[in-house]
Structure formats: structure tokens, C-alpha cells
Length: 414
Image 1: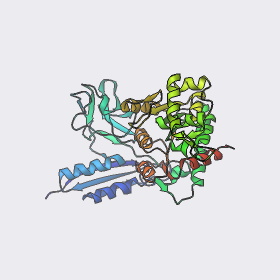
Image 2: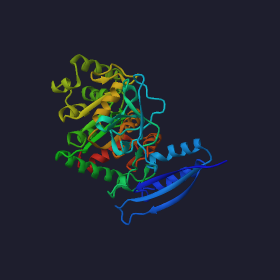
Image 3: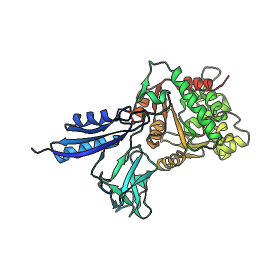
Image 4: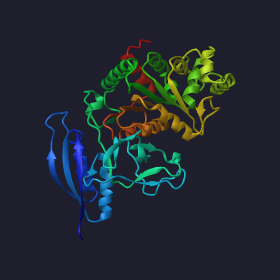
């Protein structure tokens, strides 16, 4: 059988980021072979490296599969051609051979010029406006008839991330998920990054917002006061959560309980199982969380801090919600769009104790945003760290311990 081949080109920080090794290993594991040609290694840490690789396979189909697998690592076919695109024939439906995006910086080739794709996010398509030489990502459900959607893999260039220059936890490892490593040095590095971002945010610099996506375990486990302080101190600028975090936070404000459990008494209280329902009902009667805070009904806690500090709040509902509270988005696609709209400008994401919100938020984030995932279930931070970013850190620990230690590193003295 005659082998088929294609030459691909890698450029950037492909040595220190282990990109070259990953590409070569992928080729071999998938049953292909390679010849490594024209390898040029950057002389300094900041200097890029490059390599030309001849990829061989036993069939055109296998070669296409290999090229598809190594493209997210930045391996671009050297034979340059403009990208191909086709019009969508039905609303909400991509063309059959649409290109599915990664969360890495991506360019497409239009009329011989490389154009940046705007709004990078994984698992979307690319919509092209040839007249304006622009390209943007687009969710499947928002495609309109006639939208020009990139198809195939020619004329598409993905740029792998360089290892960060900062000498902190985000810069040394590709992923970090362990319940057996000491947490304090990692949390100290996260605190330093957050401190710097707060300074930049106050100076009006772009990309300096801190996003926290959190679950109700923050309240149940005792992290409410720490998170409230972080928000009030200007360390959190965007909050993603569901109905439960908001409901139990305000239950604590009204009744001193969370799921009917006395937060100071340390025991269940009579009829406490009704408290979250009575809380939701009262806020619904008032009309909104913001009005409940402005009117003095809710005087402290996470929701009060968000209203008082003008934190962007997106609450995405689930099928199990009670109520729900006013402001909870019960249409999942509307909630996804609201989360997507709040992400530009985020420079760090903290995903704490919420499997669904952590994974949903992680999928919306470009790879350039450093991400910390904290959960007692190691499967959650492992999944987020496996997204492919050097700047993904996972901590297997409870939410209250993480938020308390982080706040103390930043100066909280409860």
C-alpha cells in the first residue's frame, strides 16, 4: 500500500511547552510516522522555536484523522490555502463539514491574509464576513440561514499557548490536580494573581476582572463570610451561580440557616427545611434580589455584596430549582448567552464547588484565561485541567477552606 503524506509546520514556544513532543507522540500513537525537518530552537526563553514535520500514513483517511488530532496543538498544513466556507441552509444547523473550534487562539486565511477569529471558545463554528475580512465564533443554535460557516481544515491556524512568564503556580505545570499536595503555596500564588488583577482593574486596564462560579456548598460548608469579604474588597467582579447559592445565602441572612441547618448553632432547627422556600417566596414578593437589598430586607452576605459592589451576577437555573428566585434564567440557552456576554474582560476564573457551573464556565473560557477549579470531587478539577491550558489549576478541597485561606492571604481578619 502506498503511503500518503502531508507537511505541517509548528511555530512558537513548542519546546518548553512540550507541544512538539505531544504532536510527535500523537502521530505515532495513531499509527502514522514522521520525518522531523528544519527544527530551529529559540536561543532564549522568549524566542520562538519552529519545526517542519512530514507526516505519513497508510491511507488518506488516516492522514486526515492525524492532521485533525494535531491541529489543536498548532500544527498547520504548510501548503497554504484560503479557508473554505459554505452558507448555512437552515437556521440552527451548521454545514455538514463545519470546523469545530478549540479554546485556543485561531486564525483563518481569507484572500491570502490571516485573520484573527474573534470570541474564541471551544465547540463552536466560525462565521465569516468576507467583505469585512472578519471572522467570529458562533454557537450552533444561533446560526441563521445564509451565514457563511468555515468548513474543512484548510486555511485554519491554531496557536498553542506559550508557558506563562510568571513564576507562579500557573507557569510551572500543564495541570495540577491533587489532594495530597500542600495547598498553601498554591493558594498564595492565586492570591498574588488576584491582588495584581484588582490593582489593574482599579486602573481601568482591560482583562483584569476576576470571575467566580460557585455552588451552594460555599454557604453550607461555611465559606459565605469569606466570599462576601472578597466581593466587598473588590476581588470578585463577576459571579456565576444557580438558584441554590443565592437562595441559601439569603436564607442565612434571614434565618441564620442553610438548608435548615443552623450555621452558628451547628444543628438542624425546627421547621428549618422550609426556610429556603420561605426565603424564595419573600424575595419573589419583593420583586428582585436587588430590591430586597436596597430596601434593607437582605442586609448582608454574598447577594448583598454583589448588589452593593455592582458585581455582574448571572444565575442559571436547573430542573431541580425551587421557585426560582427572580432573575434566575430558566432557559439554559439564554443563561449560556448571558454567561458568554459576561466573560470578555475576565483575567482569572475561580470555579468553586459546582460541577455543572464549573464545566459550563470552563467551556466558555478561552485558553488564555488562567483557571482555578476547586472541588472535593477530583473528577471536576481533573476535567477542567484536561482542557489543554497550561494555566489550569485544580485543587481537591472543600470550598469553605479554599475561600477562607484565600481571603486570609489577601488580608481578611474574621
